[in-house]
Length: 367
View 1: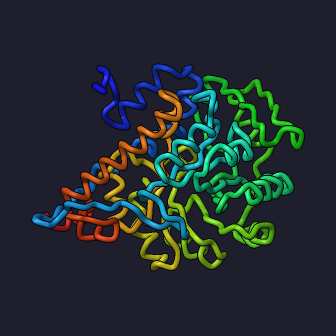
View 2 (view 1 turned 30 degrees about the vertical axis):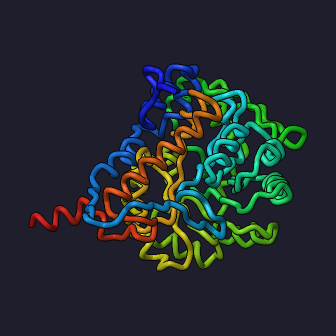
């Protein structure tokens, strides 16, 4: 079938489609970052400063992008990052996202702040699913959600560790962002918070999130679930080593899509430091700024086991529902496959540190 005029040819064009279809309040919620949005821009631009060093005359007639993440075979080193409130992007919400992940055979992360219930997502398809959690002041709420995820076949818990308080997202304050309906919690805790001072979402977060959460609480989390635990929000080697000591099975380098602390580093810029600290003890996943197959290739070359895709999935969902999610994932997979072929890598294990040059290395070469 001929492509219609105006069909998106890359992930960035899906962002433009999403901007056209979403109410401004919702688009700004998904697209925005904290304060000056320095880190928001830097997450993407830091990739642009890394070049790829291809190898020629390699037989690349067969490319295999598949990998194994925590024992789960997946078609590509891509995980859908947990992100809130997919029903603000499309009426089918996280159910459509999960089906898109299942169709493409990639892992899906479901957010604690999802607008579809854990049970709805679990029964919608056979995607391998990880469940992301926040720790609330009321620990019983977090425990209730962890147990539900475990009993509904989720395969791992992702503890988000960078949110003792919500970052200052100025677009949400200006728009007086509503706190969306959190059906997972209905009948358990009130999700209605009204603030006349700006973002209702920020007011809800202030009321619920536990700012006392610290390293020793990972032992509590391990005591309430048999599921493996990954920690999300690591940005340096020291915290990575503490996470391993605490017994996590995976580390996610993330600055929360630049929505928490502005002027925190671009995630790709700290990847090598974390990988060197971890020394292969657990897989390191990279979240933030992935918009191209070349970005995925660069992250793998610098030591990531896989990448997480956040906003692009939301943009695909907003533009075209489940088929938009599939299209975004397939675009990134197709771009990665082409990048691997042109760089002379037949499998993800063939992608090595020598396949990329960072800004620092280029600077040292010029000296």
